[in-house]
Image (cartoon, rainbow, N blue to C red; front, side, top):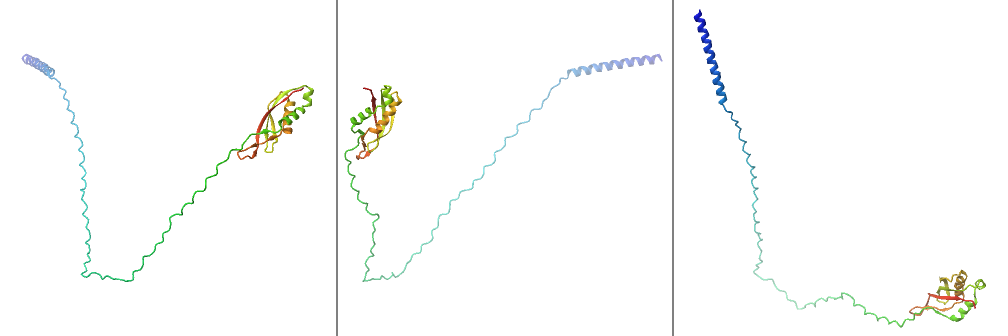
Amino acid sequence: MSLIIALAIVGLVGTGMVVFLAVDAIKEAVERVTTVDVSEPPPPPPPPDEPPPPEQQPETTSPPPPVTPPQQLNLSPNPPPVETRQDIPPPARTEVRPSALPSAPPGPPPAPKGPSKARGVQPKNQRQWSARIQEDYPRRAAQEEIEGTVGVRCTVTPDGKATGCSVTSSSGSDILDGAATKAVERYARFEPALNDEGTPISASWSTRITYKLN
């Protein structure tokens, strides 16, 4: 009985040593194994698209040569008879009309103009009517001893009278200014202005009237 127990113990110890050695061997084998990362190569690129086949051009065919119809030749064995006449009619007269009437001859040139007769306004008997204007001295201006010179402009009509008189430069006195314009229209007389043909026309005329007490 003791012998059996001893053999069993020896067997268990031997089995345990064998198992322990086997485990160590397996660990060493596992440690020696090296891992290798194997990566698959990328797939090759797809082949390029093949160009479409060129379109077949229709063959150009030249048009058929033109066919001329056969000409008919009049081959008469006998020529046509020729008719002869003794009374040949005269050729027809063709009336020729002129395409356009002849242009009228140019008229005579205009007569040359004579010398111009134009002139400006000219006072008529100015000394006489100037004296009358001085004699017609405004009474109020004379009483107040007012003197001065008035610039006057007026329009001389074709009959030689003054109208539309206005003051161009004042004397400083309304009395003398108003008296001067009225006096020229009342007493002044003129030879009217003339145009190139010598016809009387209206024109402007200017003067200065001086009022001075003696």
